[in-house]
Length: 236
Image 1 (cartoon, rainbow, N blue to C red):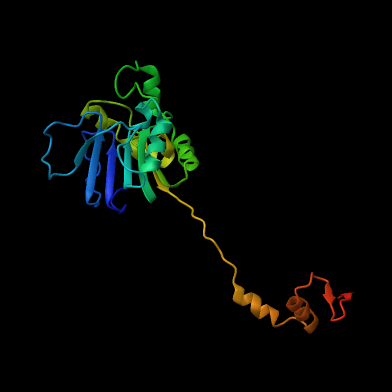
Image 2: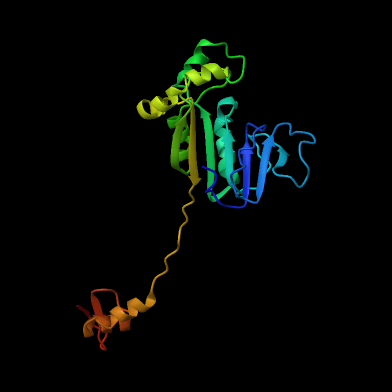
């Protein structure tokens, strides 16, 4: 999804240990985290690291072309503020790609049955339609939404291979039941254009008036009345 999004500056929030912008071709990639890795990469290596809070991004308004939110909203105390900050820093026609855990899935069921003190069960899972409504209220246009990972939350490769058939069946019979959803939105900015009067068209229309109407316009009389040379008023 990130390959065909073009621009200059891209930001990744969440899952700082994974380089999610690798396939994107923008010249500047930034990974933001509360505590960036110390000595993780050289100054010239990609991506750049920035210490930041997702509710108060240290970027100027309209300075980023792409923002990726990787499992940020469900673990944030103020997901609305996170989206407002994303809308602020994005340029017009900029893109935001959000991925989150689906509460209406096998993973959502597991979250309800298991203790919520561990990751990823301690988050507040948000449904894709709910996040889509938030984006629309902020002026975004939702381009696409996808679901994936229909297998149950198992940790061993053996059990993962046994349940792999659920991915194929889920994409066909239960597409919105994937454990993870991904939404791509574009920031739309509608501008106003001042339309000035076209005086040439008005002069052209005056040529088609009758002789009496042209006389009224030339004398500067109120509509419906004309004055003759004797000072008498006549209704036209």
